[in-house]
Length: 507
Image (cartoon, rainbow, N blue to C red; front, top):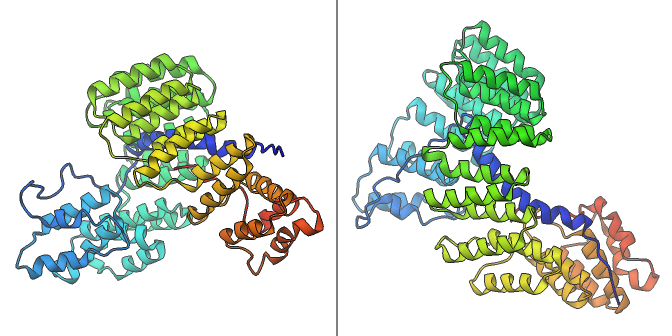
């Protein structure tokens, strides 16, 4: 029985698995353009290799569901002291690693257990953490509870950042007006936060108005102001606007041009299909790469050279990258996804071997990129080998990995294997993930041919259906053998119950 399962729907998962890695590189590169309340400390507090420190006790508790308050309390019970600056440094370090809940616990412990009176800066950090952990409403409630003498420029700015991160335009605009009334809108910082918000939500028509307000108030446009406007022009492929802003930046003595500026412009030219001009910008960008941002810059250049199809330059940057920096998992993800986008599977395989021998932490997202490529090309044995290697290392493949294999087995007429693999995908799913609709329909069609009612029931049981609002659809699925209707007919109605081909594309 030959069942042909189209890759059309699944291709979005396969390609986005590669492109999502490249998007990650892109957003990491752009992150330096915009203000954030996050502060990065270069070294964790008190990290002597022999000394027992509070940070060393907290660091291994990676699960955000596990509170670190008992660790803090035990430290004090043992008669050990803790300095305020060490607690502040630990909060910064935890924020760097996106351990926001644990950072918030330390912030609250500082005032609740150690009775430190928080400074406006510490209040601002807590406000940011509350919004990340509990949401905007809780952040607003905390802001209202702050003593009036602490509602200063910093705390208002932190709340504005919370609104911007939550893309709450009306609330951000109302708060900005209050800041104007209080005299807090007197430098580029908060204007840039609002400008960036407008850029992110696509309200580009408000950018020039706000920048004109800055000009009228004598607030100088800094590099971030220019960069946000440049990014907006690039996003809409407004070449004339890009050229104008770049010229203004180059002529402004207070703006120090860096690699980001030209990289963003290059991306704009790529969107407009102007590869030669994009290449010119990429070369300018490369000339300005120095210092701490070198790793992010090289990863961004990998994606840019891929976008214009320059594999020779891609390898040149990769080798340059390795000569200057230790390459971590994000770098390998960028390079492998770039090569796969250029259909260079053999090159991607070589980079994978480099990664395996490079001593970096095992990250399943990296082999998962090749697993997708193998399945799409029909190289199922190679895909199976990578999955088995991961399982042998105690790793759990993602639901989208099993789903990808299931689709590959269907294409290769290995239907029983496809059904079993789809079950594994469903069992490995995360909240919100759904199987590829075409793959599921094909498996049900196969079970119809085998008169396997029990197998169909088991498959649907794994999916957690039927539900009260979807009984009709699922009853028809369970009865498809008796009534002779194609399985794909009710499957096509899964949009109504939320079971569409939502791809878990980012490993």
